[in-house]
Image 1 (tube, rainbow, N blue to C red):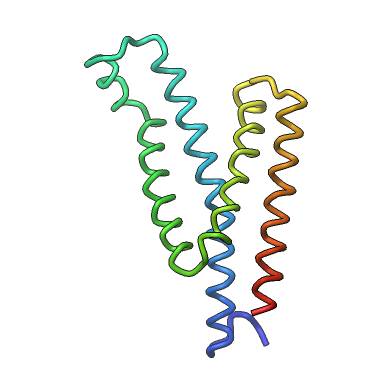
Image 2: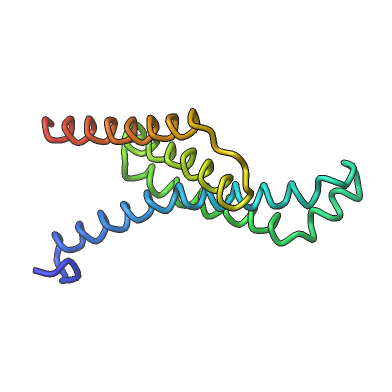
Amino acid sequence: MSLWNTGPIASLNRRRIALLALCGALPMLGLGYQVAAKHTALILAGTPFGTAWFGKLVTLPSAWAQLGLEVVTFVAWMTVLSTMKLSAAFPMTALGYVLVIAAGWSFFHEPASLMQALGGAAILVGIWLIADGEANASEAD
């Protein structure tokens, strides 16, 4: 039986796949927001805060991208939370920390220390442990 067949089981499988896709998209949306924020901050760095700063801000595509990403992230997060327990959904957002360290290093040439790499690895292990614990708790129910 294909996942795309009609019927209650196929419909449930499609919802699960969509939910997993949303969960995977959330860290990427957060990463996009942070990259746009850094880009915006770099452009605004030489402008004193005030009317000119706001005038420049509203003309920046990266600032508008931040706003759009924030709205899309909010909608995705509300969708995820409407179908998942918070304790299962929230740990996935920690992946964003690892992605931001990698993006800072690759896009903005920021140094990444050994401690940051170890911290990122610890975050990934923590996400795996929480997900595994959540799966075991679900099986016990």
